[in-house]
Image: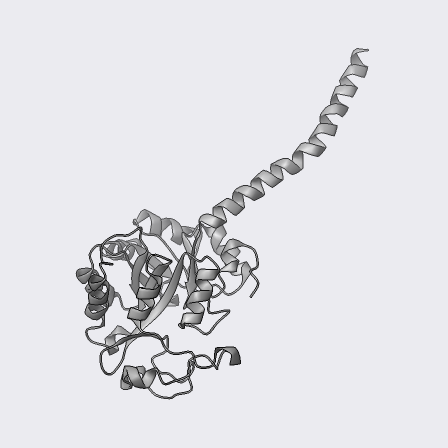
Length: 283
């Protein structure tokens, strides 16, 4: 009788475990999804996998897809106006040619900045910095990249003045961040906007960044945002130890997003916001 009872008990335990195992897996999966949803989701040049980069259509798409931030590239026109465009020339993303800084704002806004991406975006204009911050302040975070600031003396002060005029220079849930590959420009901007978080961008040449260099960045920056191809769990840990967060760039596949998620980064800069949430979003 005793042996029969033991066998029956083991059978019962085995039977129950068959049903409980999927519950544990589901709990773990749910926990992972919750963690992914806490990941800061930055739409690179807007949702630029779905609409022409650095246009209002791309920013609207990012808002629709519930990204946490839009990332914009800021340059300056010949007449000193701030505009959103990535390249230092208009050749790739408009029907014009030549350097951004050789155009006045009026001339730039006569260019078609959408047709290259798709006929449905024909007539899209290059937006101004002020237009973007007026439209999206309080609705979505704005990650501002000062693009090639060496070409545009005064761009840091001009961007700061636009934010100060709108009372956007005080901390507001960290919804305004300024970054640049030009680290001197980041320091200059921080001087104008000491209460705004700033970040240093890092290309592939920063793969061997030292702890001392990270500490130097941390004196004026809150973020160390590298090319995703140099990110390791060790670099993430050292960045955190220096007191900074990390938003790597630029994710264009689900696999890349998943890899960065596993490495423990704080946010992901991506052309496709849906990859950060781990599920597709239809156009």
